[in-house]
Image (tube, rainbow, N blue to C red; front, side):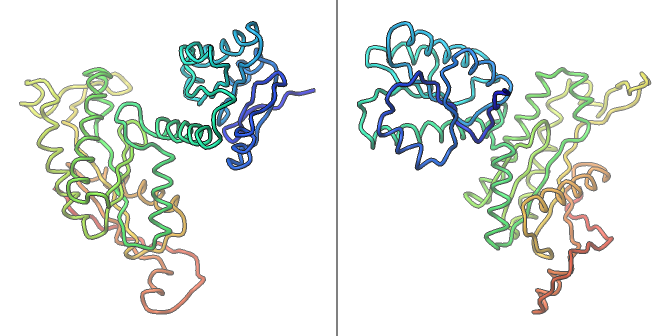
Length: 343
């Protein structure tokens, strides 16, 4: 018989048949997270390494031998970087609190805790886990899942907004010359520029997310596009030369090797920003925004220097809506691209 694997939508409950606290039963019902019960401590560790569950609950109540085994499972999970991010709740007798926390448990509770306190603590543990895993470890900015949620929220709201996809040019060559540590400093610098400019000019109406590497996606109010993008490009071009050696900064380039080993001039890094808005388009899903922003970012990278380029094409449904006519026609893109803010 094949043992079912875990997944990110399932909770794992390691138990050897202890009576379940009433608050835990109520929490399972309210959380609506499917769970798999198991008494196989060794099997939990092996299976979690293959597929991460949403949550692990370890019932370490019982005799000393079982408590040591159960808490040992928590310790093993938290020692591995792949499984350490999974939130682990450990149920213990009162005298085992310190042992469970020392093993790395994210939350430790005993059976006699009140229903209100227990459910609040478990829910808070999951919120902390989501917050910590949804940010990029280097920049601490929201990651892919939060970006998707932000785009979906913007689309659903119906408000006029812009999605800005920012990407560095010649970053790989910089990384090859100066090393990954200096490259990571540049990524953090760009993250700080984007965050400070957008939060400074848009306050709570701006969002900055880190897709990964040197790719960032931001959302801002439509009216703020020229001011925000101009300021980002200005600050970037002012600060980025100081990430190079004096010699490279003075001449404005360095010699790097291509894949064939041939030397060529590599200019200082520039920034390309592809901008997509719903001013002339009607979006129904966040993925439509991200795909078009990726396309516009690619176009911006074909332009010299640090630039921002706005997609000014109009789809058919948006054109009809602006004229007060409803249509079920599929989206059609015009062939023209319009660049703005080139510097």
